[in-house]
Length: 195
Image (cartoon, rainbow, N blue to C red; front, top):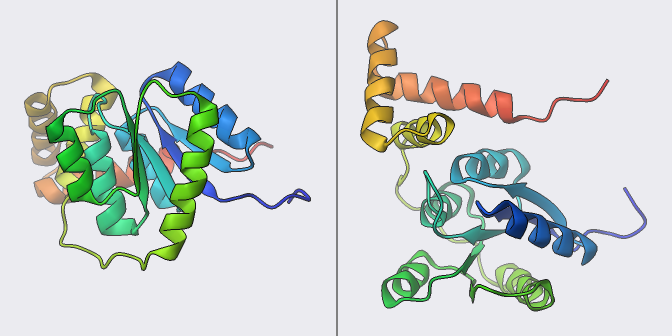
């Protein structure tokens, strides 16, 4: 541990690598511990492993969207989240409110605007009681399909068909095969310890 305590652990998710690097650097410089991901599947795996106190999510991404990630964070990990998006249409704003985001920022924003917004969101999240766990929203099959879509650039129906074939080949139920796939990916996602 350094002399300076982290202001908090934040998961940053954006499929634009430049935006992701800028956000990660700026928030690290501002004293936050940053975990970053450039897709929704990795974001969920990293959130499960590192348990961030807040997530900053892009909305429109290949595979799982920021909304999918937010639902998972809310329902399974009770992690507060905020959105950063280039879109501010009515449907997007309605969905942001429905999911219960602590903040919604519209791109383009520079890091000088984002840091205070993140600090305010941390303060709001700390003041609010944790949300009660909600009914299951993202089952292992949906998560496994998302992983296959991202890893192999498949449309969802092909990813599901591939998962189905895998399950049949191994004599497994679809849900069990999906759970095993997700567990295997989580294992691979863990950072290897340098020698």
